[in-house]
Length: 285
Image 1 (cartoon, rainbow, N blue to C red):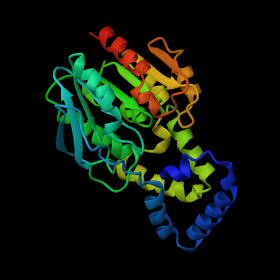
Image 2 (image 1 turned 135 degrees about the vertical axis):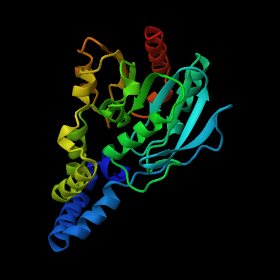
Image 3 (image 1 turned 180 degrees about the vertical axis):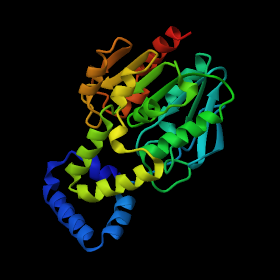
Image 4 (image 1 turned 90 degrees about the horizontal axis):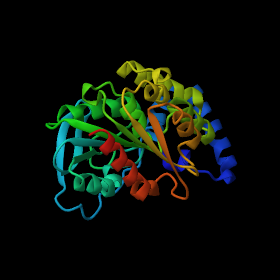
């Protein structure tokens, strides 16, 4: 999904929203198959972040094969592994500060670029494919998993994964999108794009991956988690609803670190996130 379409909070684009709605609905009436093809390009093409000019000292980049193609991984440190998953239009580079902290505390930090993101293969992106790629990366690990960290949509990826390497492992969620399906549909509606075309596109993916949208519920998966979890979330987050994290914090095994003034992105380099990792990693030792 284009960040310009879905993450804009500017209400001055009401006329644009109207025109998008009329155009995409008419396109579907005239040529439904082509309309879905164009929708795939527009709605399922993330923005690729540029590779940072410099990497942290001793960081190792490695391409691994997964069912979704070649994924670029980034590894730092030694010892048990903390796996980090980013969100839509993000990249592993967003975790470099946290990865340096993880490595300094005696662990290995491994992040990777999702399909169609960063330096990984792929043109289109969607949750079923991200989960399949994530599981594929887990299959390549040689050291045991100590825990997982995820940002934004990455929270849905790790919570929806059924990989055995994650069983009983602590989870650190950063600005998670816990009402994934509702949030996704809401963004499409706010953009003005034809929801009928979108649903047909999602149905195609559901058939291909045997993963219907209505089966995706990260909040329920978090409730079923058999381990400790910490959520770090900013109260003013405009992309991932803070209220969902508040609701999740009522679960006995979930703790919420609420921040202010960090938004959806800056929180990834914040002291509260590092402190949350330290608490969770110590408790899981």
